[in-house]
Image (cartoon, rainbow, N blue to C red; front, top):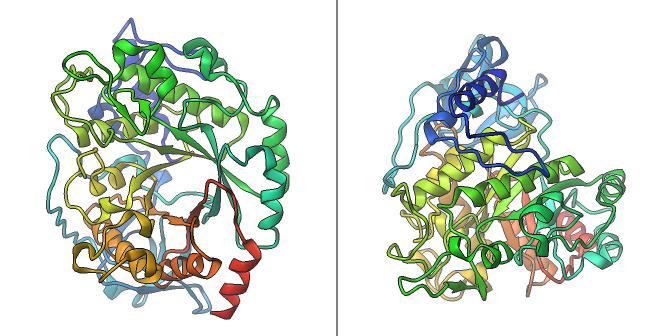
Length: 455
């Protein structure tokens, strides 16, 4: 278990000192607050972790099995866990749980942090709950199933039969604030959200798992219009009292701990239904947010600081302590040194979440961006993804407990060959995971398989 008994004891000790605070269980929402310090200072049972860790000192360092076959190339500054040494080789485990041998010359305790623009209030030290490899980690090759196609799921799945796709990302709590399955949590807090698409969630989860799919619950966080509409006194507002509307919807405040508890309870409920992972989207401020807006910032926190604290709060309080937690960020967060004005500071998020999921969609990049791409990025999917993932890896090298990078890639408005060019750019950089985004579900699994064979 990645988050150990000591963390549970810490939480219980903290709660016992605060008589009014109680725990959150799926379907039973009560208020609870932990500080960022509580989430960070966790003692780990020494016998349950590797004896020591080290950092890779060069890029593309080969990690080989007992017979000398290449397992994967390791990245510069990537954290690995050393189990034993033999001659000039060290037996290590990587974050994914792979076991293999690496030449000692590439391993060192030396870590060179180079965060260009650290954000005030954010934590960039070793996040101790991530001090070990993940067990039974699934390298995701996934597709997003949107509400537009959820009722024709069988048809979508036929398109990816016998293909590389092994994962489905489903909206447990979608962009409009609605839930996928019957939700006692929503019924208690936002009854309007409890209008499920499927009445028997556990049956659907079992059916999909029987088909061999790994399942990720996408949970939209602060773009929560039904919650904001019902709790307008807590929604983001202008100084004159009118409500902010972004992406056509009201927004909840990332500073609002009651929203945190609602999201936490929904997350625990999704895990109870049988999802394998939790992935938070819209874990950010709206594009049009200004610091002088009314947003319940009672602790005078910064944007990056509060987004990071939210993710740490989820890490500390989910009922299933070893579940993988992902966070979606704009692809531009890998390029921009600051927080992209919405709280997406790459190092701050990567440091505390298990998986960071940048949206590397070429259609979201400007022409001639940052001197990397000449002309239209949409016309250059390989080069755009190549530049993006290189920046992401460089940023990951700035934090000791960096997240695994699992990018979203553009599947809409592209041919299968253009989609594969993005996958190949990631693969050439040593990234074996991706998630395809197309709200219309027009995925071509056979085409992707054929393209991979050609290349």
